[in-house]
Length: 83
Image (cartoon, rainbow, N blue to C red; front, side, top):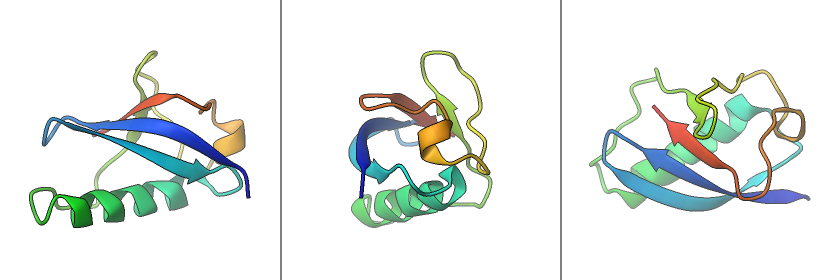
């Protein structure tokens, strides 16, 4: 399975997470995985309210939950914002 290393910044808790994400999944599915990992690693400091979106940090563009990661513009080393 192909994976990309991305940096995810979470402004709500002012923390950055480096993680590998699969390229063959939809962004929405990957976002759920990212949310779960962040919730578990922050021990309750961050709680998903169901209204979080992924943005490209460089352009500020919203990344569609319906797009596959490989077609979304996310690349190895991309910096994303979870807000």
